[in-house]
Length: 304
Image (cartoon, rainbow, N blue to C red; front, side, top):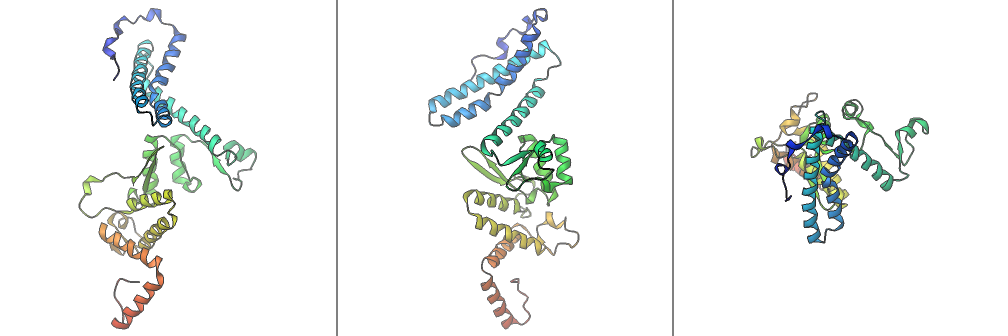
């Protein structure tokens, strides 16, 4: 923990008459840089992850730096009442994020992308084969674009708070948060989960849509290289939805044609599994249908 607190500083001793405006600019910049210590320590933790003693020292240093930044921001606010530290820090990190994206693109995808300027000046509004377009959008313009022309975008890089809003909005365009999987990838581990969270209000009622969880697993399988297994789950989901046998949240959005049958969580999962088996082994399914019809005449079983 830091060895000092804000109360240790004599804030009443601040003298506006002695204020140096040039120095104030440096104080504001330093407050943002030091408060951003978590970015630097995360990088160093990855490099020295096997040095536990250094990692502990690094964590203490991070807390000290963050407190330095916050106190410098408080001083800047005394000197300039219009200075909003939290707003300034958000702008600072957003700009930092943009620079990081540009640096990452240059290092990891050199020769594989074109900029928006090149898109128009060199390629006449056409993306060349084997390349992707790297462009920038402010949040409100991006949200409008995703409603009007979502097919133009395949990958979005944004900050955590904006990403939370955008992911939910995009999910609504395809059926809601119940049908969107989530993949959280870190430097050392990855977490796969539905984007809608725990949905405690319907827990235990058997009415939740398991698609988001299943699709999260397909992302995990793709990450592992189990592409065939992932595609089988997706195909099973597609066939189940095409049969219009869905959970209540999707049934309420099916108008023309309407849902054929509303299923609970277990029933929907069972239907997906049955369709996966039919896709995986269609000959066995066809044989079973013929035998069933031979015994019962006009078969009314659920095997199709």
